[in-house]
Image 1 (tube, helix red, strand yellow):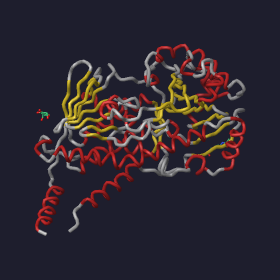
Image 2 (cartoon, protein in one colour):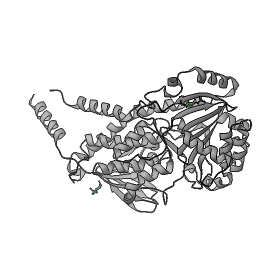
Image 3 (cartoon, rainbow, N blue to C red):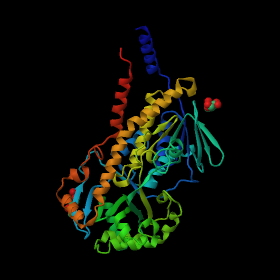
Image 4 (cartoon, helix red, strand yellow):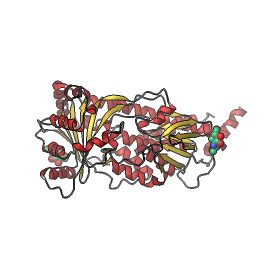
Length: 478
Ligand SMILES: *[C@@H]1O[C@H](CO)[C@@H](O)[C@H](O)[C@H]1NC(C)=O
Ligand SMILES: *[C@@H]1O[C@H](CO)[C@@H](O)[C@H](O)[C@H]1NC(C)=O
């Protein structure tokens, strides 16, 4: 009786103590997730250092669709979303002859669905407040999780010590490999993409340029579909159109010179992509194809992995293989934790990768806050973790984050895989069936079907409910 009362009082004292510990946060990876994590850490009063293996930021890549959940997460980080990207007004599906099969209006949706944004615009917005915290050219070589802190050694021989280490270094994460040597590796998914941004100068007055500018004004997300292939055209700024060509592996094997686009030269990509659309009398697709500088792609191929982020040449195409990361048993180990693609590398079918990385950053630090680390308000206590029952509590916080976040991301991964099968039907019969479904299915079923996935889904809210629930259930029964 007495011991339980004492314990209860002690617990209450710990829970209600208005004392919060400032952490020394080390972030590995200076991309979307890493910068978002850095900003979240800063907002909560922690000290933060971000380590990026490259010598500078890479502003390549194509575009991201920021769904409502991603926009909300950005706002919560204090990153302004004003003027960021373009809010799309409709989604249109076309068949191989360029005939409109389905047209879904997004304008009616309130609040808006989200915005389409060039990757570099999102990156620079996140980078601005974090500029002074980034160290470039820091390739992680070794990680040591000690009882009271974490130490990282870089390839250049330097080291950094912190209380918590966040691995935000992408799908081929080094942090993941070092802290979970047994973890499954990302696996190739059966699709390849080639894409880029078409940037129009006001001086461009040719008919294709006029057409593409109209596309930006119309703010329509267009899908051109045929068996095994799709072409997506997505305006993402007033004079910028993103394009992504996707091909299913089965078609690559049959139709590509070396059985895979990744083994081809950019000029062979050109032949293949144009070949797929030869029958197309679609002016928009022809306009896009006429703008692509295939020869400029060469440079980006030299870098393996996320080569698609490297290119900065305007209108140059980039190629990326699709990867799928099997579910990890945990995102955290001792004082280290994974977020973004390093933790859950989703297929690009749902366009959720960047959105969930930003959410991860918000939710990780919120969970730590619940465990007594950091505070949004000013006046954070500057006490080293080791003075408090810190390390155990910190680990508990990190594993709570992992436990609460994993089920959600496992569901997203399965949905992304299902979507892949839906989009890349193979063979004429599958294609006919797809058209039949596209024609008669409700808007819900075609696009908005999964409320929890797109518009209606609020990952932050769902996580918070779980977090509160967990906290309540942890309180000792009186
Ligand atoms: C597509 O939908 C938009 C918005 O509902 C409408 O303005 C447009 O006329 C439609 N286009 C076609 C070809 O149905
Ligand atoms: C970090 O941990 C190591 C080994 O446990 C210890 O020697 C070192 O003093 C710690 N650093 C700080 C700043 O507490």
